[in-house]
Image (tube, rainbow, N blue to C red; front, side, top):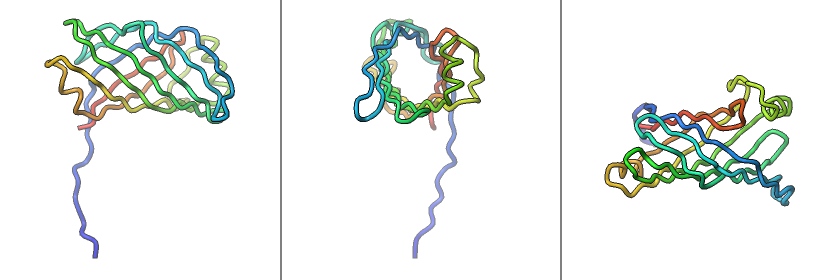
Length: 158
């Protein structure tokens, strides 16, 4: 007979919002595993429990698996207001139909409820003030802005 366990109900708290500025993509094309583009991170901001600038370093290695599903692998660095560095790694999914994809690429504001853009986030920090980030599970709910950047609200799973 299997023992029944009671686990706590998940809770989350908002940590920050990030606006990640992106440059023009480098198109690798069809790779045999999907259609690949690498998009550089050119800057941005983080505001909330961590405040700082996103450095022009890193990028997103996107892999389109179907006509709508893009597997995302993004890495960048936040330089905090108090001069610490926090590495951010995001792995996620952008699921957007073709018409929405075209509208977004043309700079039209689209309701983020019309597509699915979610990612898990892993932070790495060495500064004592931010070591707690190394021990959390975080996730983001994101959207593509009309200027083709990414706006993300980041939450910690408690």
